[in-house]
Amino acid sequence: MKTAYELAMERLRKQDEQAGVVDRRLTEAQKAAIAEVRNFYEAKMAEQDVLQQSRLRRTLDPAERDVVEEGFRRDRERLVADRDAKIEKIRSG
Image (cartoon, rainbow, N blue to C red):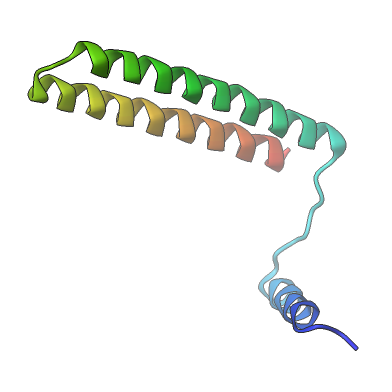
């Protein structure tokens, strides 16, 4: 007897087949490349966090703090977008 999860997954696979979605498995090389990209960007984000905390400690003016925080958010969004683009490029081959 199949579990509700297994039945739901079968239905989703059938819906994907009808919609023309192709199930492609990642190769070991792709998995390794994706892991490397994730690790690199995780380290970059951790570095940005440390730098952000340092900048905030030196800044007392609330307006300057807002500028620093906005720059941090922008940098973080850029890093996430770059990471996601590289991962998608690896997945697409």
